[in-house]
Image 1 (cartoon, rainbow, N blue to C red):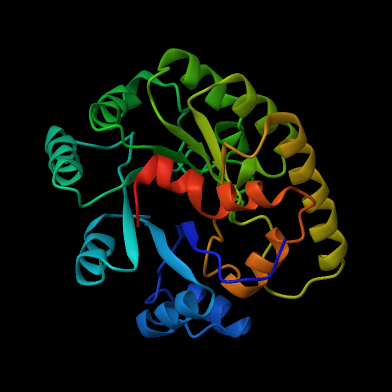
Image 2 (image 1 turned 90 degrees about the horizontal axis):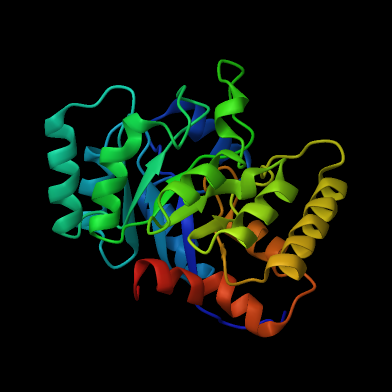
Length: 272
């Protein structure tokens, strides 16, 4: 890709500034892990907007984005296994008022399949406002999870069941990238983000793994096109600088970089 000041939207970040484990991970790869540090990182890498994932509740991310609307969008979350009518009403109101641009769900970390009936009221809200639903997919960071819930093939049934639901498979469903390739190719309403394919920390064979991942992403683009892919980092797992450089190594056309880094996100979330 040509080196320049192309505009970038990061469609997948986390801001666990008060989590000791996240702080340790971030500091270990040289990140300035604070609100000011994050905004400096975005500016230095020409990231004009970042979509923040809510993890356990919505309050912190909602407040943070309301205080920093120029730089960030927010994705709400809700536990499909443990919600009340009031939770659905709050979600509906917040999306209607523009506080949230997406909904993030965590199959694998929570024991549900995306097409389970218990999730339907959530999807009805999402479809009402054309709000994308992002699903954790693929590997998890804990052994106290079940991968069967997080396989990207589960999204195929959901997309078939709700063809008007805008769906995003997070992390390319890694390590099942080849399966994600078919799911997004088959289903017009399914997209995927490129976030979190590798951590920023050093580990043996890191560069070799990155090369193999690039080859898999290239295979996906050659098969399914670049129109369904969104740039994301999974910050603070990895720095913006390293991840942008990684994606720029893809052997694809210049116009496809523009789609991945910016244009596809605008289609789903609007102008930054």
